[in-house]
Amino acid sequence: MFSGKFIKKNGKLTYATPKDKLAYEIFVDMISEGEVIDMFLEVSSPDHSKAQLAKVHACIRELAKESGYTFDEMKLIIKEHAGLAGKSFGDCSKSDLMLAIEACIQIGRENYNINLG
Image 1: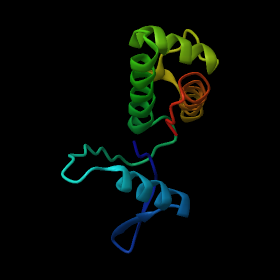
Image 2 (image 1 turned 45 degrees about the horizontal axis):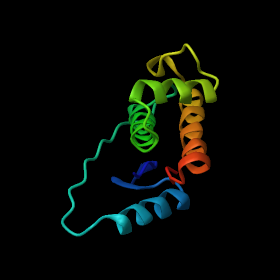
Image 3 (image 1 turned 30 degrees about the vertical axis):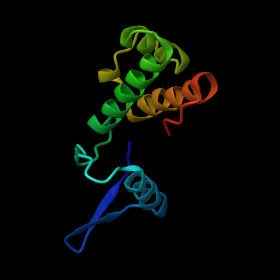
Image 4 (image 1 turned 180 degrees about the horizontal axis):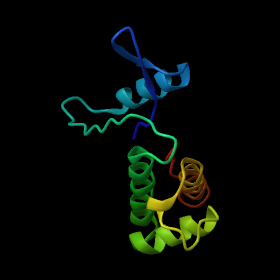
């Protein structure tokens, strides 16, 4: 999975940071020849983004698959770990969703040897 930021300069989208460029290059290197990729782009806003929601849900799906928990069970585990228990992801801020994504990455790394980052 790739998640990064781009900025429009001189009529073209360019990487917002060198880190974004590196993450994109690593992602492209992992794609098999002929593999189809889904993309979703949106303009950033001060609250959460659809890309963050998509990433947290994709991470939860992957963790649920590896752990044997259902999606809903894993979602509750992630929310509790991130300090968001009882809160809908749809009502979360960017920083809240970043905490949830970081919780997914940490749980995946520590419990299932998965790199979701």
